[in-house]
Image 1: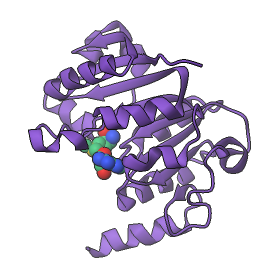
Image 2: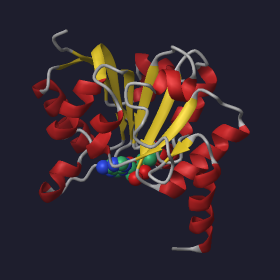
Image 3: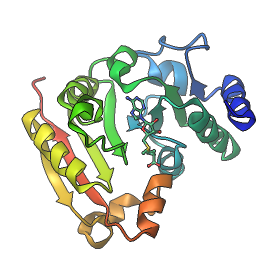
Length: 221
Ligand SMILES: C[S@@+](CC[C@H](N)C(=O)[O-])C[C@H]1O[C@@H](n2cnc3c(N)ncnc32)[C@H](O)[C@@H]1O
């Protein structure tokens, strides 16, 4: 591990907004995120695979009446995200370092109001299908923690990944209510709030159109 990366791991330790397995609160907030972490009763919005947290931090600034939790496994990226949130004095955002496979160990059924999946690794090789963040195994878990009629958003540069996700969402009773292969030229551009994630900026600069969809979690109450 490089020196810089080491420093960022250490920084996560002292950042109260980054929760990782070295901290006492790790795994304790399930069902108590509002009361224990945010000390309010505001809706919870997750960003899955948040990387350096540009989107979570950007949305947290725009929507102080919502709580945002960026989730990723990369400690150095989350440390950068948490540090930025601290600099911006954002009290309504936190970062959780876990493998997404365990998301339902960290959130109670129906605890989450909204989910964003931003530029996930497409993992297009057949043998990697189960690692795609929109594989049915993951969607089953998101479905459980997301409240009935809660919204799931997906943004990706990868058309094959987008098409794959449309199929798995349909199979898992997510009702797709908005869909475009060119977000910036679509009526939904305004819902993007002018915030570009790091990967989004890279693809945007290369001239790639951004695929976007929004789906409702249909489930029995
Ligand atoms: C391509 S990056 C996108 C980062 C950010 N959303 C952006 O748009 O700049 C994908 C992120 O997903 C995270 N990720 C991929 N699979 C994961 C998993 N199973 N559990 C937790 N994080 C995961 C990676 O660590 C990485 O930071």
